[in-house]
Image 1 (tube, rainbow, N blue to C red):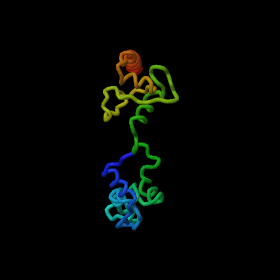
Image 2 (cartoon, helix red, strand yellow; image 1 turned 60 degrees about the vertical axis):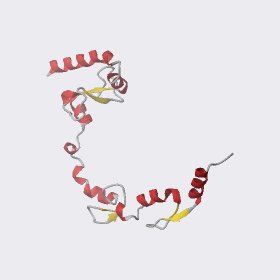
Image 3 (cartoon, helix red, strand yellow; image 1 turned 90 degrees about the horizontal axis):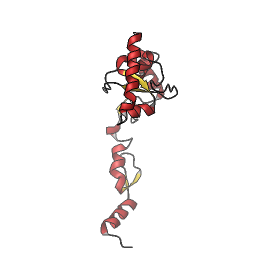
Image 4 (cartoon, rainbow, N blue to C red; image 1 turned 60 degrees about the horizontal axis):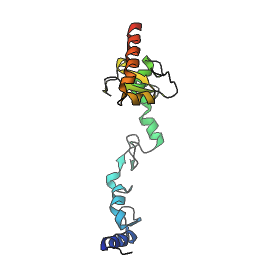
Length: 157
């Protein structure tokens, strides 16, 4: 088997080790830039925790679970702060598919397909299978069920 010169150079680079300029870890030459860009000791990756003002290089906003609990405590037990389309839908509709009455796994479909419009009249509960039908070429099989559901719902109100 013959190796071309590029393959041989890459093999030599993979075995050659260099020290990271931030943490002095031994890293192969091919991965040195990637390691240095993501290195926890790199000053560019450091953030200040808003609770304790300690510098950290973690992914989140805060440096620890304790600081996270303090920082986000205003969200706890206040559903109006983090309502999403699912909670809005299930507060206004039964949590079951309008086509097959599935209750275990229920998704929410936006009727006008605008994900920012979370009004209760725009949301309907459907199982994953029928949700896929709505977004496929078989939509016409589900539309009569949706129309009858909306008609029954408007008659109730």
